[in-house]
Image (cartoon, rainbow, N blue to C red; front, side, top):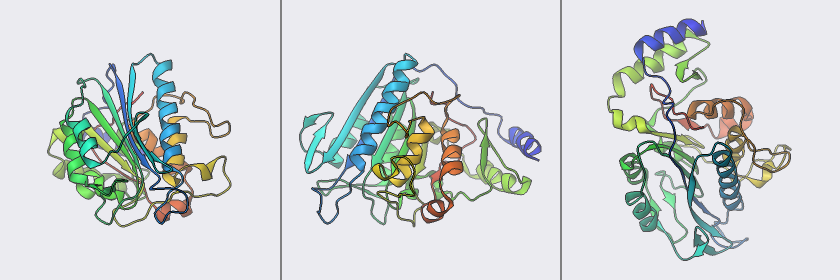
Length: 292
């Protein structure tokens, strides 16, 4: 049945995964604890999320001999910095970076956010400013290169293009949307066929920690290695990228890493309890994005 579904979907969507040589990998990350421990809105794990993702992406890029650069917006224990330079930052500085980013068509831009989100999905900056989904996605789509965003915050499903909601039927296999059930594969495929009309949107993929109506969690400890040290969603994101939780060290992932293999890995490894409470949402497009 999966093969039959895939064949029909290939007829609908002949595009395949964008496997092109990378010139640069650019990592842009925002993480904030919102003051010192004990503060009302304090989050413990965003700085660790940023650190581990930076280590993992640096390691993969180095091993694959791809130039890597990063821009790290961090607020940790009340101290704010941009790539190690202590200075205030907020919405204005982030949008300015995206608007003036020097990138090329073959670059891969990975955007990451770990922090609070309000009921509209806006990212809450430590200086009190807010970055809403429309403003972020507009800047990302205008930047040259292929982009993906991983957003670990409450109500983050609002960043997913078109507000699509994933259910248990979707499976991505070698860059194509397939399913164990023909009906479950056909319905979202037809929806894509009739609603995804702007190819410019196909250069930006978003994976969120939750739907537009769910909370995300600063930690979710079920006794797994180092699980309490990371955001509930970012823990599984790191594992999908290949990060070794048993040793707390970066490592190369097995096989080719694409946007939808990351989604599939998170879906297959996350506990059912957490999945029901905070269901990751992914951009649905006919084309997968090859990361590494």
